[in-house]
Length: 265
Image 1 (cartoon, rainbow, N blue to C red):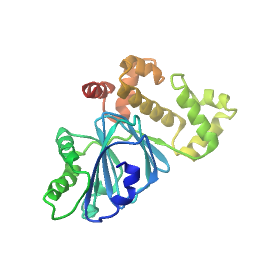
Image 2: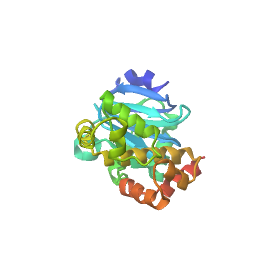
Image 3: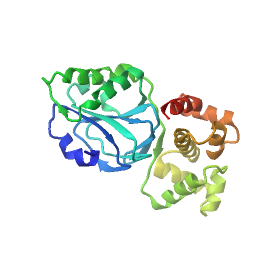
Image 4: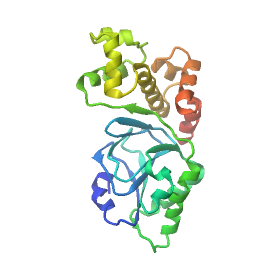
């Protein structure tokens, strides 16, 4: 059963842990759950969008969405498997981890524990002999998820800004500046700078950096280009400059993700 078709079923048992392993739809529209959601996108790239931000989920990372948070999900390829556990909210107040959206590297231990549950695609209720194992996964998350990844693109419904964002994304290898974009769209540099702050709540340069990092993850996971080519396609003139910026944003090196991606092919 697909995630979209299962949305109502997820809500049936308040105290349960609902397990779902599936080939995921490419796009799941805005929705929310009364349960917490842990999803690992196996071997692919995913995007989680909230009303004001778009998060990138690279390979070997999982995302946590607290109960009641509205979101959409986009998967890079429809054949990608999503491994999802929907946890009850009992005890969430004991650790702030459970109340915040987060994207985290998945440890080998956590991956193996989640993979072990692939034989269970159903509600697991308290009293079931499988319930303590699933509960232990939730319990260890704060201890094994210390490094949060924050590649989040601000989002807006403003049509004028959407055109500017689309142009920058479609021509990302170019050397964009506030001046070049302002000339392209007939806006003064000062007005454009204020426009980014008012609609996206970030500066032009910060948005451009995040956009380039999101594109970099997409290209690395595709595994079709060398890192030097990825740097060029993302608008960097040297691999070292690209690698340093990547590290500033993600606290990892591009080569770390290339190695992981290669091992999954």
